[in-house]
Length: 164
Image (cartoon, rainbow, N blue to C red):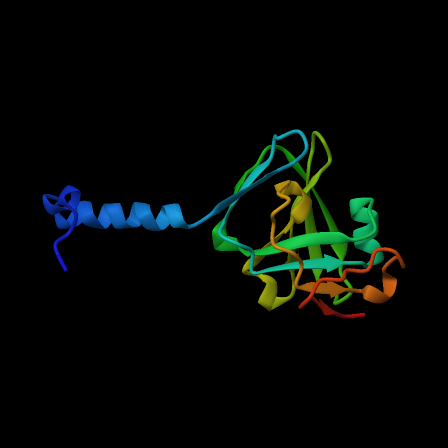
């Protein structure tokens, strides 16, 4: 078996080969794009989320205008926000932490949110799954506040953990 590199790579310097490898690695990493309804605020996320969760709490129902909220949790370092003008709303979570919601000032879509006051959450940013508008987005692995879920909106996905 021939162990020589392909001819296109044979005359490249080490720096050029490293650049090619970096480009190939970058091409393998999926960039997920999200935006508000009007497109003014756009988000790019590197790779898949750490976790996708569904929340049936009353606050998420009111915030979304739906029967639950679905969020993708990403490491902050993997998210780039190309922010248009946003408005912030802060509410106190059930655990006493402050949740900072960011809405597009033009169309009102929730585009992302963060929790402060809980040390383990400082490295994460949450993005509503709907702003990705991707029918192939990963499914939820967690459903919380199931005791507040509407009877017809139960999440029935194999492997999804459920908590009241």
